[in-house]
Image (cartoon, rainbow, N blue to C red; front, side, top):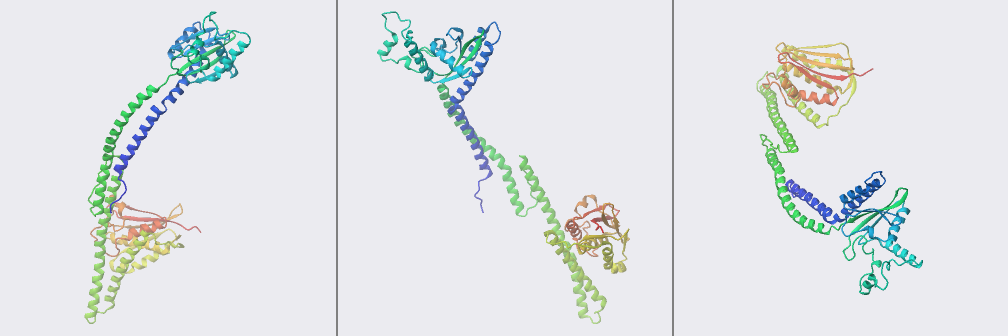
Length: 530
């Protein structure tokens, strides 16, 4: 059945496209939509820092204050205006075309001074197209107050008698009254020119013991032309980036998915039963780790398949011999008079027991592997239980000449499942009998350790086990002796059953062996403390 889910190649492709799309959106937002706001914020922060720098220069004892102010204003492209409270210019540096702070009315200057003083020594005024309306209203009110007090109207000042006021002439001609606009003519920009956004910082500074007013003006130059330029550039950049991202996304997704496609093809062969397949994917670390894991899986499957075949061969051999013997002796006892002897009956019984042991071992290992076999622990005498194992070998000792030696320092009790530990010892002794040397000697040793554990060792005098084979002796169906030379008893599952039972009891176990010096299988159980 074909999966409807999207492939990893297209996922990578879409993720890369989404990433490029997010980058383009951010570029449009920063370079076009919020460029004006960002520029004004940066320019305002620069003006604040510049104002602090000018104040530091004014408060210093330097002999060339004017040169320093002029150099700083030129560097930052700003206007610096320092005047006393009477409106007299002390320092002036102008580097914004068509903008002169020194042309402002005295009343407006005083308003800046009052605003700064009321605000703790500094004030900030932002405006679009001119000074804020609040200052203009204040200046207008100040002029009207002066006129009511009999002072000369600043609009009529410096006009010779009999001559027409140019401002009134402009108003009669329909032009805008400069006093009713946001800022006076000539203030910040010349009359009739398009006015830019601006910011003024007013600070009260003390020079020679007298308060002075410092005005720093920075023009917030409109960036519409820059935005339009960037917009055109971004259109081209967007088109190029989309094309490039499509190409790059296709190449990367194809490169990444190529290894996965090969691994998937190999996995399908493995699922079809081909265990000779090998996974090749070294392009990326994760893909390489996946390949190594799958190759290890194939090796384990090969090993299990090999062991399964050996099991079938061994079980077939173990089943065929007793079945043949049972059938042969049964037919003899049926067909030949006088052959129904106790000896022949005993042969049938012995072979039937071998079949029973084989079936029981296979059932036990299946239950242990499935985890359904439970442990029924009780306190019992382990030493006596080992001695009872030898009763099963009396006939073997008589007929085959085997010698089983058991030595111990004292009797001990343990808390464990007696039947299962009995089976462990029985299987270890069986294994020793099957693989002991020509002297047919088997030794069992019980030794009490200082850490509260009792150690049981079963030793044979056989050929031993090669070091490379030691890790596998506990595996299911594994047999060191592939020739199966002495089938006295056992099925090849005994050591695997031993391993699972001991792990069920959380016991320590192992094997010590050298080629030509026999083998010693051991396990340790915690003793029951009286």
